[in-house]
Length: 182
Image 1 (tube, rainbow, N blue to C red):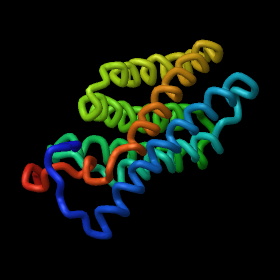
Image 2 (cartoon, rainbow, N blue to C red; image 1 turned 90 degrees about the vertical axis):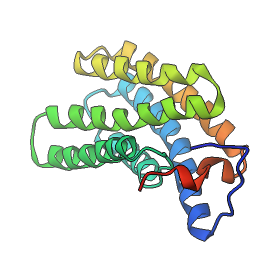
Image 3 (cartoon, rainbow, N blue to C red; image 1 turned 90 degrees about the horizontal axis):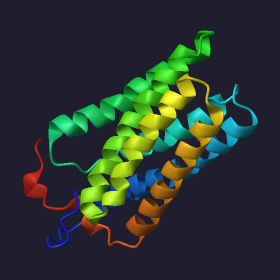
Image 4 (cartoon, rainbow, N blue to C red; image 1 turned 180 degrees about the horizontal axis):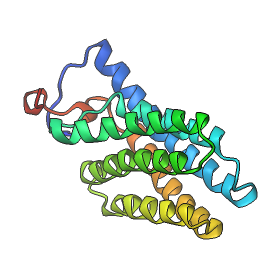
């Protein structure tokens, strides 16, 4: 997690994992925006957009830099559960697996946005979990206009976070290696 006063020496793997994480943040913003637009115009067919969201979530979950292993475990496994549920949705006819997979991805995305709100000292990023929870509920209740509004707001905040993240040096993401629980 960001610790700007500590400058660790980054090896190649550190640079790759931080770049993958940042790419995931950027793609998540676009995935949320695509999901909002798709829900406005064709709300029943959204698996390709969910695959895009799953990929963006997986990029972030695969390269987390969070000190507490229990939090890291929850966020990573929420994405794995979402991926499993998404693949289950391809073999079942019901929408329940898709909705649960989106909820699992939103757990990861919410946790990461909450974490980044402390790293940036930007309390506005704490709205992302609220917006994603609201959007998930609106998806379940088929309120596409409210769903799209919630997703667009979350996407704008995620893209703002990505823009701010891309301006930071890479070592900000790693922080102090000695604080990581292994």
